[in-house]
Amino acid sequence: MSDVRRTWGRYSSAFAAEGTAAETRDSIRRLIELCELPAGSSVLDVATGAGYNAFAFTRAGCRVIGSDPTHEMLLATRSGWRERGFDGDAPCVEAWAESLPFMDGSLDAVVSHRAPHQFADVNTFAREAARVVKAGGTVAIADQSPPDGYEGWHNDLERMRDPTHEHARSPHEWLEVFEGAGLTVAATDVVYQEHDVAEWFDRVDAAPERREQALEMLRTMPSEIADVYRYEQGRMRTPQCVMVARL
Ligand SMILES: C[S@@+](CC[C@H](N)C(=O)[O-])C[C@H]1O[C@@H](n2cnc3c(N)ncnc32)[C@H](O)[C@@H]1O
Image (tube, rainbow, N blue to C red; front, side):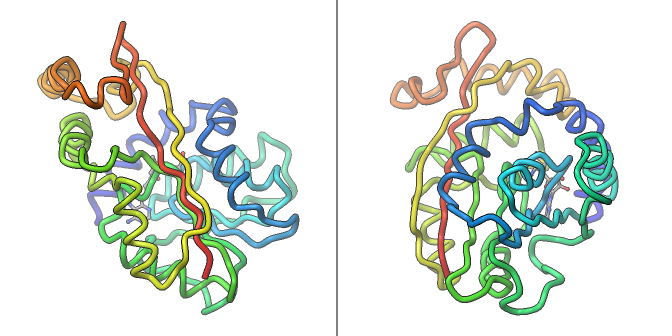
């Protein structure tokens, strides 16, 4: 786990540099829409990184705490909070997704954006999230997600780019994770994040031979998923599952 902190500590300035555009991603917008949280709801944003999802939920009227195990990421969240003129200091806690330092039934919602594919144990995360929300509370994710049946191809591609990648789950796999934690899925959607492939490699400082092998996978992807990933002219799309469950 110290590798996670070392790796993400190194990436923190690249993530902080994404700026306010990162807050307006379709995956964050859809996560907020599908969560349907009333203003004033207490929300824990797990693996907040540089804080973009936490900032967007704050703008939507929620009282948000960001958590992340990587100290440098939380420093980026605190700077971003001040730069945006939100009140006081960013409420943050240094914590792993698999061990949330909150009382049972103490929060209205636990959310996580663009991060659960990095978690060492997503089933433990889901059980922890279910433990800390109130009865009827919300547990929700928006994360990169292969089409059902193409989990192996997607995860091989991501791991080629970034060896710390753990496992992105298809919608079918997320349903199993949530149900296994005693949650009931209330809403789900898939949105697409279009991005520049070279920048995607740069963000994690991918080694040249890894870039070349990942590009070869993109060039030779199965025809059934060509229209999902749409790799053309140096750009591609990554599918993102948005799933909202209630306790
Ligand atoms: C892609 S980054 C930031 C994602 C951020 N939520 C966003 O939307 O920009 C992923 C984050 O996951 C965190 N992370 C990795 N493994 C974790 C774990 N097991 N528990 C909690 N956070 C973890 C890293 O420290 C990193 O900040």
